[in-house]
Image (cartoon, rainbow, N blue to C red; front, top):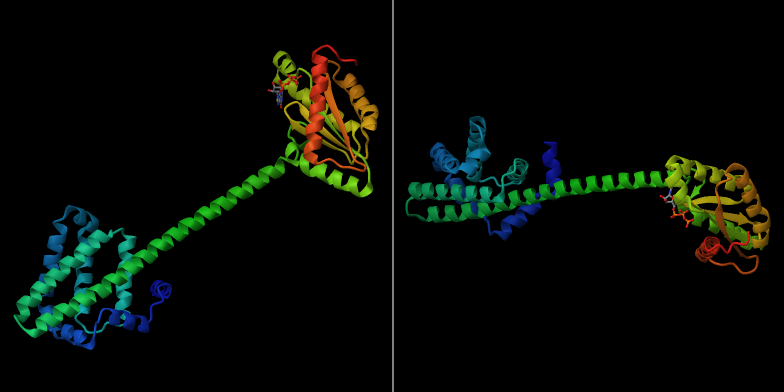
Length: 353
Ligand SMILES: Nc1nc2c(ncn2[C@@H]2O[C@H](COP(=O)(O)OP(=O)(O)OP(=O)(O)O)[C@@H](O)[C@H]2O)c(=O)[nH]1
């Protein structure tokens, strides 16, 4: 029985553990002999006891439903017969313990709640005591046998409950493992999706998620080489109006084309990012603010005039380095602020260009 072995191993069951348990219940050789003495007497009443047991059990509708069909009832009856004989054989060894552990496992598996198991143990004890009283009359053996039976039943109930609990814990462990597997799979999916999001689907530019990483890389390299870095925020003017009046698909085309313009105007070491919606951000390596305005921004404006003559943009340029370097966050905030300022000036009709 490989399953039993695992169960015993799980519960660390050994001969010496059985000895400890017997000692804890003061289950002595005297108890063994008292039970053994009653074996043949109980055997005579075996069928009567088992019949009485199941007629009382099945009179309870909930238990009758648990037992189910006649075949199961028959199997339970013969198992009960074996158990009653086991109680009086005088052999309470590892094999005996194994059988009790198996009962615990079976009870858990078929969903017998402890209340049913305990009431069944109580009923069996009552029937056995009634029969011992009847068979043995008023003598010393009767008292000793009943006492020994009580200890042995406690021994068995403990084993059954331990297996029950162990098997419940294994089920919980399995659920926990499944949940952890699911969480891991979910994390992998999210990681994969994030990986896909490195590139913006519409424009093919770097996504905002990776702006910080790219900017930091450029800043680190610039610091080592003592070069300036410029950051440009770009935002389409009245894009909502374009969307609303020429359709969302046209809006998409504009964003896509603007992305190309930004890329075409940039050099290999620059990073063009779709910041979100109609906002873009460009990190120019080795570029002062002056160079950005006179070279990069100028190129953008002329490309835009060629490819999207009806589209206007606002830009905010900020330089950091080559001596003192601002933090990435500050730089982005500053560039965004400048772009917003330019837009506000234009909207108020104060634009000079
Ligand atoms: N077609 C299209 N529209 C988008 C996309 N992402 C965001 N938008 C729209 O872009 C518009 C941005 O509008 P606002 O932020 O009000 O900007 P605006 O109309 O350009 O106004 P100002 O920035 O003040 O000039 C919103 O209407 C968004 O719904 C996209 O991927 N495709």
